[in-house]
Figure 1 (cartoon, helix red, strand yellow):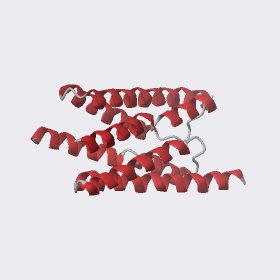
Figure 2 (cartoon, chains in turn brown, red):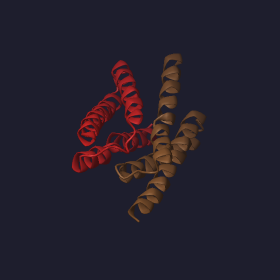
Figure 3 (tube, rainbow over the protein chains, first blue to last red):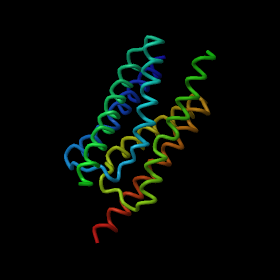
Figure 4 (cartoon, chains in turn green, blue):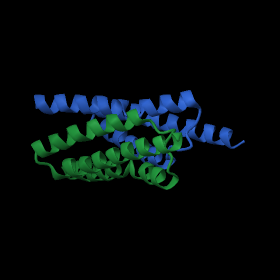
Length: 89
Length: 89
């Protein structure tokens, strides 16, 4: 139980921060032409399902991490749509 | 138990396919300048930890999905390094 909690916390941390570098890079460079929007649509769907599941089983680690991933994925989609339009002009 | 298995299978499917669109896009466009390599380094680390954990607890869903994610992340890193170098010339 202790080992699975440690692994869960490490995995939760990595899951939460995975998309941070991509959002930061897109924010800085104002360009996301090479980034796949489908990847972030899948990730948004996945994170929202997990958030609902986490609330359902009342597990704060599951819903907190997945809410962070959901928000980062939505941010990336918004940034990509915004900069793709701006860069096409 | 049945519900958690269903959710686990749906999540496993989404996790396994998340990076497929990005690898396909990079493969087709031969360009990944806007893609964050740090994102895929984090994801490679995470997937390898989960694969080891999955083998440890003998859960084929955990280690199969994470081996797929690991291979896709490594492929994306190789493609990014290759095309970034080629596009700099």
